[in-house]
Length: 154
Ligand SMILES: CC(C)(COP(=O)(O)OP(=O)(O)OC[C@H]1O[C@@H](n2cnc3c(N)ncnc32)[C@H](O)[C@@H]1OP(=O)(O)O)[C@@H](O)C(=O)NCCC(=O)NCCS
Image 1 (cartoon, protein in one colour):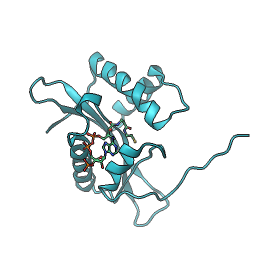
Image 2 (image 1 turned 90 degrees about the horizontal axis):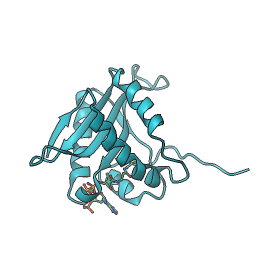
Image 3 (image 1 turned 120 degrees about the horizontal axis):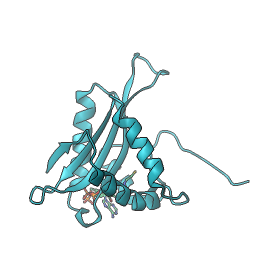
Image 4 (image 1 turned 60 degrees about the vertical axis):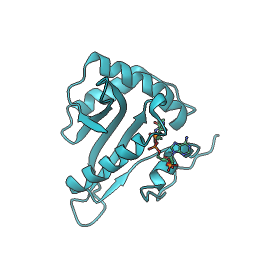
């Protein structure tokens, strides 16, 4: 699988990501609503962030994107040795018709190597408790829960 880094977005890139995000929200924030403008604001902000990286996995034949990966290098000020850098796996999404073909795993391998290259000590991510596909994928790379977000309705 060829992985292409994309820094400057075209209008088409937004369209694809908005399309992905409609489903992404259902799997990861099922009681939230999809809003293109909020996602656009977050992407636009990170396009100016030198520690944020956008990647598309491309179909080698059509040269069209089939998966999207958004990574961000962060610092944890509460850990030693300082600076303690970790990689935030901010967003991973494989086109629905390309799933179960090893692309998610390929992107995770890429992310692991990227984290090492950037001297990050760990990779952190969040997912919904019911997103079994994502959790199974992460478990294959030895991810385990270390903090749990809890809530109650009042
Ligand atoms: C999660 C996701 C990225 C996996 O991508 P993928 O390309 O289908 O994954 P792979 O084919 O590389 O599968 C790797 C492993 O993931 C797990 N997995 C993938 N799809 C699964 C499914 N539908 N059910 C259970 N486990 C699944 C399996 O452990 C699989 O390993 P196996 O094939 O040896 O069983 C993809 O389903 C997706 O984009 N989902 C929607 C967006 C999303 O929820 N992203 C995660 C946000 S936190």
